[in-house]
Image 1: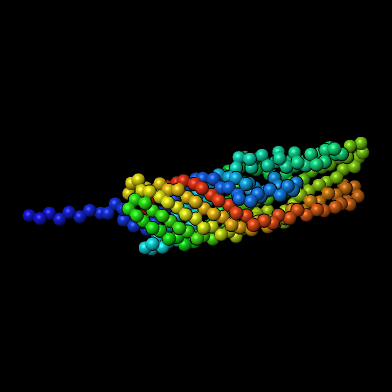
Image 2 (image 1 turned 180 degrees about the vertical axis):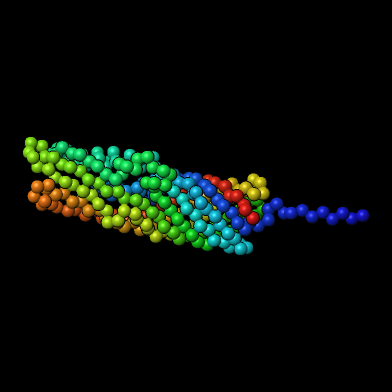
Length: 247
């Protein structure tokens, strides 16, 4: 008698996965411009990130991926203190300084409030070798940061002169078109779970401006100064996570 035994291949090609991960993002070129308004924005040169939503659908070896990640840095919680100190250092020799800003109310932020958010979508190519999985991506997306307003009341020492200073951005939310090639290598520890290492490269042109306006409260005479932020930014993200194979 001949027995025929059939068994499902535990490592059959993946068709649909979700892929949460965490890691760090590093800026190759500095984002800081040395302007008084630098701490009114939410960008940071080094952040940690988490992919809260990442899913990929495959047809044979090709697929399409969409993901959303948040980038945060604990130093972003101190933006108001840094901005206030910068304004005080600039004007305290001649004036009594009282500072306020929108970032003052962002100290107790939720995971995404006051962060750098990234969204990407595009094609993926996979190679599977038994338990090992390689993913190559060429994605396009958006990098989003926030800018807050700032203001100060400057009371001149020894006189009754009061100046009102304000710093405003040309727009509050800033979305920058981003090119995002990336690579993942994963290893199946069980049939449905893959541990993975991620490498992402980000390229985008940061372009926006702030206007500083200082007016005499009595005469309304004033002067304005523009701070222009323009730089082609290169970022690298390195992280770890896991894939859950839905099918």
